[in-house]
Image (cartoon, rainbow, N blue to C red; front, top):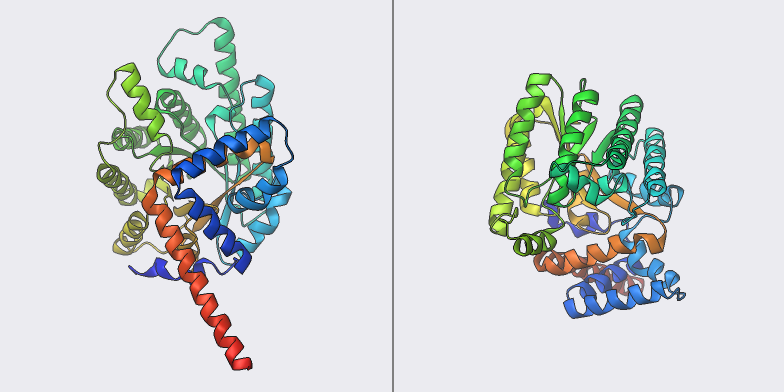
Length: 398
C-alpha cells in the first residue's frame, strides 16, 4: 500500500502530452517565489487595465486549475474524470464580494449547483464559502459577541436565512453540502451557525458538513465538543478536514494584535493534529462522516490504514478523500483506481473573478516547497516514461 501513489501511469492517464508539459511548466514556475510574485503583480495590472490577456490566462493557469467559466463548461472535465472513478465538487470560486445583491447571487448559484448535482451522479457534493453569503466583518462582529445595530441584526438575519435556504435544499434533494472554513476571527459565528444547520438537517444522516482547519490547535477540542452536543441532541456530524489556507495571514494578525497565535507551533504538530482528528472521526464513524481534504500522502495512508484496521470498506459512503483539481493527481486517481471515494474540488467562474482564487493557489504552492517538488517529480517521471515508450515504438516501426 505504501507505494500506491507512485503509479504515474494511472495518475496522469487523462492528461495528453501537451497537458503534461503545461503542468510541468506551471509547477516549475511556482517553485520560483520571486517569479510568482512578479507574475501575480503583472497579472493584476493587466486585468485591472482591461488588457486582452484572458485568453492567455485561460489557456495556461486557468485551464489547469479550473473546470471552466460556468457549470456547463465543467461537464466535459467532470465526465472525463468520472470515467476513472473520480467524482467532482463544483466550487464557484468567486471571492471578495461585499454587496447584498452579490450575496443573494452566490446563494442562487449554490442552489443551482445543488439542483445540478442532484441530476449528476459524478457530483455528490455542493459547496460554498461563508463570505459568499455575508460580509467578513459581520461574521467577525458576531464571533466577538459585539452588539449589532438594528440594521446589522437584519443583515445577519439575512445571512442566517441564506444558510438555511441552501441547507434545506441540500436536505430536500439529498445532496451533501460542504461549507468551507475561513479566517479564525470570523469562524466562531460560522461554527455556531453550521452546528445549528446540522442539528436541523442532519437528523437522519450527514448532509451538512463544516470544515475544520487542523493547523489550528483548538480544532480537535471543538470537534469533541460538537460530538458531545450531537449525541445529546441526536444529530449526525459531517466534517471536512483540511490543514488550512490562511496561515501567514493568521500569524501576522496575531502578532499585530498581540494575542496568541491560533496556529500549531510546527508542521509536525499540525500533522499530528490532523491525524488525531482523523482517528477520532473513524473511531466514531457510526455518528459521523468525514471528507478528508488533503494533499499529504502520509495522512492519506493514515486514513486508509485506519479503515483497514476497522474493517471499513474502501467505498464506505461515510468516508471521502478530496484534492484540488490540477494538483495531487497521483493521490486522487490511484485512490479511485483502488475503489476509494475520491473527489476533486473543481473551481469555476469568470476568468477575471476567479483570479484571486488562482493567485492564492499560487502563493500557497510557493510556500509548500515539498509538495510542489513532489508534483514536479511525478510529472517528470511520467514524461520520461512516455518518451521511452515513444522511442521504443519508433524503433519497432523501423
